Amino acid sequence: MRRPTRKTFFSAVLVAGLLAGCASTADADSGTVATTDTAAVSTTASVVASVTAEQALAENTSPETDSAAAAVWDEADVVEISLDGATATSSSDAVTVDGGVVTITAAGTYRLTGVLDDGQVVVDSADTGAVQLILDGADISSSTGAAFVVADAEEAVIVLADGSQNALSDTSVAAESTDAETADAGTDVPNAALYSTADLTITGGGALTVAGNSNDAITSKDGLVIDAGTITVTAVDDGIRGKDYLVVNGGTITVTAGGDGLTSDNADDAALGYVSVTGGTLDVTAAGDGIAAATDVVVSGGDLTVQAGGGTAGIVADDASAKGLKGAVSVVIVGGTVAVEAADDAIHSGGIVSLASGDVTLASGDDGVHADAGLNVAGGTVAVTQSYEGLESANITIDGGDVTLVASDDGVNVAGGADSSGAQEGAAPGGGTDEFSDTGEFLLAITGGTISVDSGGDGLDSNGSAQISGGTIVVSGPTNDGNGALDVNGTLEVSGGVLLAAGSSGMVVAPDEASAQGWVAIGFDSVQAAGTVVHVVAADGTEIASFESAKDFQSIVLSSADLVAGETYTVLTGGTVSGEVVAGLSTSGDSSGATQALTVTAGEAPAGGGGPGGGGGRG
Image (cartoon, rainbow, N blue to C red; front, side, top):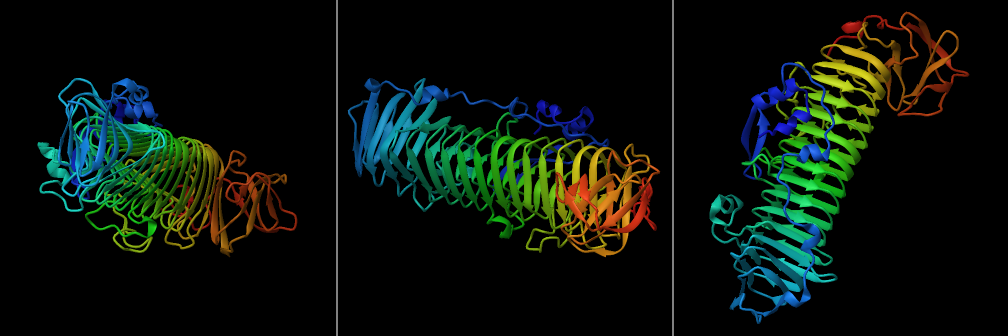
């Protein structure tokens, strides 16, 4: 499902196409519903804009809990509950004890201490007001079901008392009909060690260890907010699940899950099903997705480390998903530090991805970042250290930031179709086929930033058109002639910025002759070895650019504001690169002792070229 605020992400034309083509499909790995597009993009290519956290969450239902008030109470009002092995005691009429089952029946503040070695704490309050539960050295385990259940309450707050150590664990044998799908069908059968049917907040300065031995570790069928605490969870299935929303504002959270690490899976309401991380330290290891949302994943702060599906060495089965951060509608990162290693895409969205700021490091067995409809990088640091394809979407805009991409296939791939790469299903990186390769009215637009690409396949590949009006782009492209450093099906227009693309000579693509900015296409008679320094020098001796390649190459395409169409430039090899260097490229250097290799004329393709600008055709 799409929400009206998605109009802030795209132009009106693209939004119309998206709204017309939305459909919900079951996500095979978890039984949840994911939103996909039957019409991935409109018939007119669009530039994708940056998205703020406020825009991404504008139409979502916000948590109602007052976080500051949640951890405050009047000590005189506290009801004490002492856990003692197989039973418990309390002087309050609002607490009943039946063997090992402790039931709280009224709103208020309760402190739990001690050990309940085979029992259960149940909150069943029809009162107006919150049930506040202070865990102060509470250790609760159950051999028959969930350890802690909020069956009924207007709101539940768990406070981890400062300095306390607390633990919850359920049975390793699931009770009948405790699977997540059945529990969510309205039966409210607990399917987690800590299970709540009401909005749940966890806060405080203590520690909580939760073992979900039969299914999930922590689940709220409403919203779940984590404000503080040191929380360590292990789970057979999902680690922490807030069905309506999961908001992490702080704390130190460690998750080890056999399913998804953190998830929100309400796909029936467009204002719900989101995960928001504003702070805290999270370390997530998941066999499934690291962080998954039926709508949006929004990161505006915090320190996140995520491993999904065993990392880049993992193998993803046909019916599974092992993505790092996955949002069916969007993934938006506007702050914080994010480090992901995933067997599948490191960041994935069925709609859009916006990376506006923050420090993002990604390693993937498939795509570094994939978005079905649109991808925008506007700032921050984005480093894809390992991938099949670095950035992939139907429309990609890069407006700023420091972007480095390492890919065994394409560094940037602008295309449409099904997201299915040959790097998955056990194939070697770069093997197989990539179904996300449809041609159409797609667009790669670069207006700023610093982009460095090291690709085994095409460096910048657009199955539509490409426009470059700013930024510094350095491509160390393929060494095989079956790919090119630049590959554009439509027009390649350069009107600003600096572009240098080095690679093989079999499929050289140069900017269109109508490009507003000058360019030269350099073809060498033989392969130049890695480490070779190339200088492009004007007739008056001015050094336009110098470049030291980290890989073998036989062609270079250079576009710069200092190149004038029709003017002749000398290409030399040897000497050194100096000054400010970006991925081997500088606008200054020392060509003393360098050898003249050839001369080129700006705006003319190398001999034997083809395609727009005579640049060697399209691959």
